[in-house]
Length: 227
Ligand code: DX5
Ligand code: ZN
Image (cartoon, rainbow, N blue to C red; front, side, top):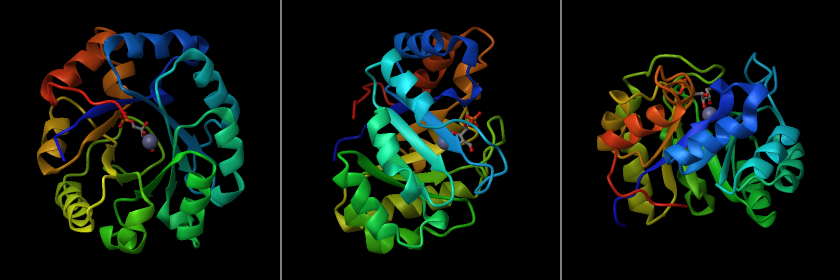
């Protein structure tokens, strides 16, 4: 498979009073996907947004919406996110006792299916479902908030996930999420990551959103690929 690299802008750190225009600024800066962090106050302590916000993002951009569900019982919400316009729906393996069925349902609803692993969950948890996956999300922080530092031990885990994908002959994206900066992203790329989620590095960049995207782009692959 040719090398590929996408930047997925996490709106968690965006100014919600101006959601449409900040998404458009990220798009103008050259991001490939918009990442929406859904937190339910149970799987993680924080409470963020749901299908209504995904639908608003859908009206603001034609970029793929990369929706990350940090919720318990995600199986109850799949249809609502499909109707809201999600393109990729990623569930946490820690929240899915029937992971195979949940991934099958996501695909059956016409979306791409992703599975996320917390830093404490081994890559082997995905072995049996690799053929069902369009995206493997390696959390590089413990989920729950933006602005946390990158966990160094996840580099070896990215390598293990990449090896698992190659061995299975899968084309699932290897995505990383948490603590991505122009210093950590190229190291994650060297370990095998291909999709880079960033909130603070884009929406809190001191020179603005477009400069934040450009700084990440500069250190990643020169030829972006779209999903
Ligand atoms: C963390 C979320 C991330 C977060 C990333 O629970 O899943 O997507 O927004 O934020 P930064 O890029 O600031 O680490
Ligand atoms: Zn996320």
